[in-house]
Length: 154
Picture 1 (cartoon, rainbow, N blue to C red):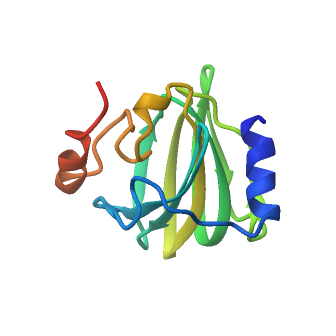
Picture 2: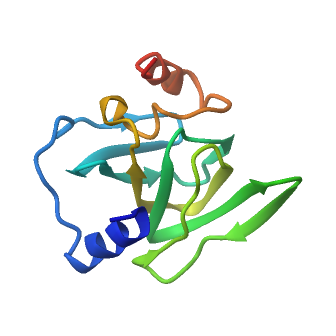
């Protein structure tokens, strides 16, 4: 099963939750909070709550990701090749987005209501599964985030 197929299955299955090594752990940064709510094989699903009027500058992750937008106000940018493309991310709630390939630079900005989303990670190295906010490569989101980054896999 590829990442997009898993995301569609996850949505069609009613967004299940399971017990996993991170159950109950909340990852807080200067712009968001998140929790890993589902793990199956190489996939993890992390529920993100982006604070109102928050900005995550251009960054990347070491794995393929896909987001299911749940609600709020969110806009994003993607750096592809030599240009930056801005994309309003106000799709219908519960829409499955496109796959961001490992290393793709992207950024997010929430509006006055903040934003909620499920981000699904496809871990090609199962021993390095972690929160996407820890396996984050780019400018720090602030001092709270700096503390989380010290937990990054080596």
